[in-house]
Length: 168
Image 1: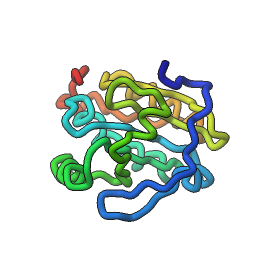
Image 2: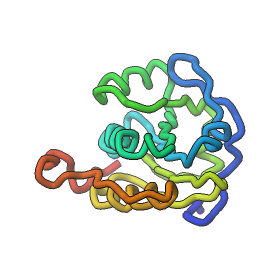
Image 3: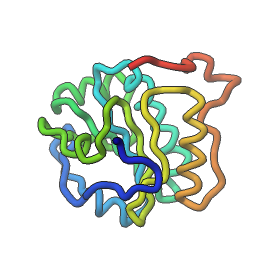
Image 4: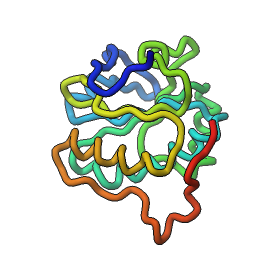
């Protein structure tokens, strides 16, 4: 069964490269603040909808210490193309590698799977796939992990193009 809220996150003390070869250690990042991890596959329709919206979490919560990382189940070349086609992403996209160590340790069974991880290493929230309504739940979980007021992610007056649901 996939890791859920209240569970400990798996061992994050390892380096992952981004699509340009820069290395990131998620345990070191966790020392700075809570993590929002989005594990995705570029060929997944729900991932294509979700990953650009994570920019809004960087915009609204990055100043409070939130660290956002995408975890790509793709090659560096495919990842660079995904970033470009997404209109740019404001957070690092790490290459998980062919053996999918985080996907296996988190025991995910669909993409995208999003985790909010508190600084103590426990999972505060998880969601899978893309449902528009879950964006506000995710925002509340991030705000709670940071100890700040939650910020709206979807503005119903201008975000009509964001679908209610996207199948994987």
